[in-house]
Length: 303
Image 1 (cartoon, rainbow, N blue to C red):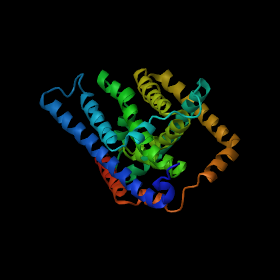
Image 2: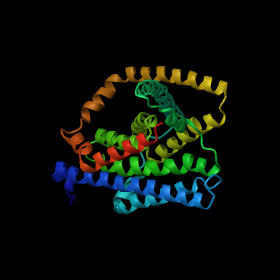
Image 3: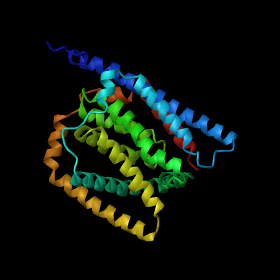
Image 4: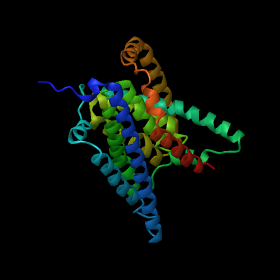
C-alpha cells in the first residue's frame, strides 16, 4: 500500500514549514562557514602562518563543518536524494553547450559590471575591489584546491543538493530559482551575485537532468578552467581569445533560445510556480535576515 506523504495531503502547509527550515539551515551554514573561516584565518595570522601555503586551511575546516551542518539537518533518505543521477547521459556535445552558456553569462554580466561601476562612481563608491576579488586567481596551492575541488563540492551539496532537492517536490522552477538566488547572494560580491545566480540556474538544470555528479564536475570545470586556468595563463592573446569565445557563445545562446522558444515556453508554463510560493520563500524572516546580512557584508567590502 502506497503511503501518502505530508506534502501530498497539504502541499501549501508542508511547503511553508519546509521553506522556513531550509532558510534557517542556510543561515546556520552561512554563520558556521564565515565564522569558522574568520577564526581560522585569525589563528593562522597569530601564528604568523597567514600568508603561506596554509592559506586554504581555514576554508578546508569551514567546508567540513558547513557540510556537517547539512548532513546533520538531513534524514538518511534526504541525504541520499542529494546525489541522485539524472535521466539523461552527459556527452561531449552537452558539456560543450553548457560551457558556451557559461561564457555567454560571463559576457553579459561583464556589461552589468561596467554599468554598475559607472552608477556607483556617481555616488563616490568604487566596486573595483570586488571586481579584482572576483577575477583574481588563487595564488597558493591550497587555495586553488579549495576553489577548484572543495568549494564546488560543498556548494553543490548545499544549493543543488539540500535546497534544490528539498524544494523540487513542490515545483521545479521554484526549486531552481530559490537555490540559484541563495547561491548568488551567498557570494557576497556585487560583481559575482548576478553571475552566480545565472550559473545557479544552469547548475540546477544539470543536476536535475544529468545528476549531482555532473553538476559538481561542471562547477569544477568552471572554477578550474574558465576561472583559474585563464587567470594563470593571463596574457593578451588569452584575453583576446576569451572575448572572441564569449561573443561566439552569446550568438550561440541567443540562437539556442530562439530555436527552442516554444519548448522553453511550454516548460515554463507547465511548471508555473504556485501563487504565493515565491512570497513565502523570499519574505520570511530567515530569508530577509540572509539578504540583509549578505548585503551589509557586501557593502563593507566596497571601496
